[in-house]
Amino acid sequence: MSDSIEITERRLIHEGFGRLERIVFRRRRRDGDMGTLTREILDTGDGASILPYDRARGTIILIRQFRGVAFLKDGRDALIETCAGKLEGADPLTRIIKETEEECGIRLSGTPRRLFEAYSSPGSFGERMTFFVAPYTAEDRIAAGGGLVDEGEDIEVIETTLDGALDWVERGEIIDVKTLLHLYHAKATGLMERG
Image 1 (cartoon, rainbow, N blue to C red):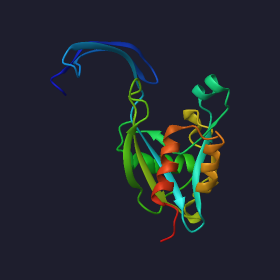
Image 2 (image 1 turned 90 degrees about the vertical axis):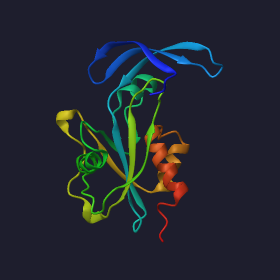
Image 3 (image 1 turned 180 degrees about the horizontal axis):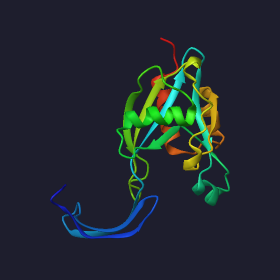
């Protein structure tokens, strides 16, 4: 931690699905003066996300599921996203392999490749996401997917093309930040190009 920043107050507001805290920071500003900054920060735990791809068939796997926030703000009954999950004490690689099996019904034949880590909204949201890509084939399918019913999951597995998914972005059908990062990273790096 920086010597120019101290936490002067930290109060738990609520703990449930996540931990909501009110934190007061005292920090030296760029102009040299000391200032305070008060924030409510929600931390639901870190997570991992993956974009499975099949270059031979030109496909990727996405999922569609209910998201309460999107329903409350926009009336959307579901969002199209990449497969993801909370770490819950596991390392990101172990967790994302398990999530791919549970949500997508795919047992990956290759090891996922770590891309990067990112915060989606660090002004008030504590989640740090680790991003992966992994090849898959039609033979890797072991189940229909759909998630875990006892965790409230009701997931539709979508096999599409990268260009098809990017068209959904342009039409406003994909609005999830982690998915946008995955798709544009795949396009920028030529992930689907045969080499």
